[in-house]
Length: 229
Image 1: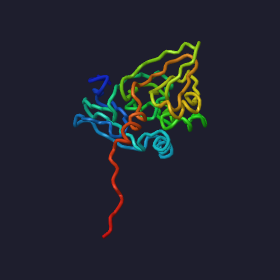
Image 2 (image 1 turned 30 degrees about the horizontal axis):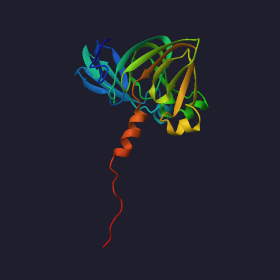
Image 3 (image 1 turned 45 degrees about the vertical axis):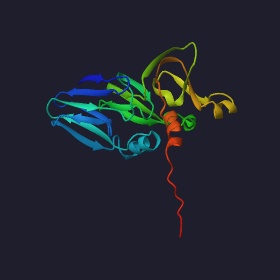
Image 4 (image 1 turned 90 degrees about the vertical axis):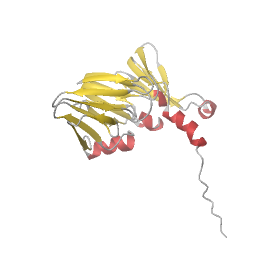
């Protein structure tokens, strides 16, 4: 499976060249175009319970698409939000990915929802993490550009929960308020995730939650008041 990521970092698109018999699994709705010889199968990946878990708690679609090439062909995928796409090959390892950042992977990689204990319930949707485990190519997406932060175990690193893309299993994390009550309510910063240990954290330069907070007040509201005569 050869890949190319174009138009990055603002409007990234993933192009995959599949040999006969090769497959790729993607989030529903991610396909831009494909060769006629690439077939698609839509299924509740991992069974009904795992699919419900991803849909209800991980923010992912209940269904996933698996594209398989009967002959060599090409498929193009893109995330829902404008931003970057990054290739991350897994080698018998685990990566935790925020709910909206999974784009595509080898079908051999397991995709499941990781609750991580009660602390994730205070982190918002983005902290219902997807647990990616196995061996094969994995493609992550972001809102905005992707930054990479290496932790060497000597100090912690704090990230706003809306800016997390992914992090390695070797890191521990704790979700907490950004500061005191006044900071939490009025600073524009809600909850943060503090990472510790040795490993890598990937962050995105934009936050979907922050964008929605800016956009929603500007949407005209329909007047539901009816005038009777």
